[in-house]
Image (cartoon, rainbow, N blue to C red; front, side, top):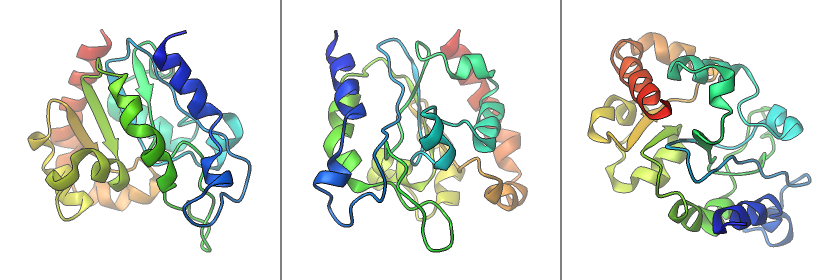
Length: 199
């Protein structure tokens, strides 16, 4: 078993947000979800699993995943080929729902406990897709702009290592409509890079 295998196994057993949370404990049993390998050259960094992913244990098994695969220009089989594509959300467990029924933010415990050591064991990653503001804040730091829209609009500044993306949720249909450059300019480059790295 490699160091990466051992670390991934440790993450999948993680109970920090229940046993030693920073604030309110996770309101349900943890089920960490991630997909990593020593050969994947692309990594998707999303927010955290939603209710469907918490139930299935497989990331992006929802309409958002369908849209993300379309943005990337990959099939479902390609997307779930862990030898070619890693998925490392900011929070590994479903964080629960807020009063309005929306997903809560990713738990801070996850990133602080695991993120740095995990990415040290993924040096082969050449392209990281930063899906949403939490991923962009962590990976871009001070280089992130004042808003998600501004960050995604500045996508050329972060390449070839990073491509920032909005969340592929239907809730962002209006955003996509207001920002036609996203589909016209960014997505063709994203698809080309994904295809190059997936072979």
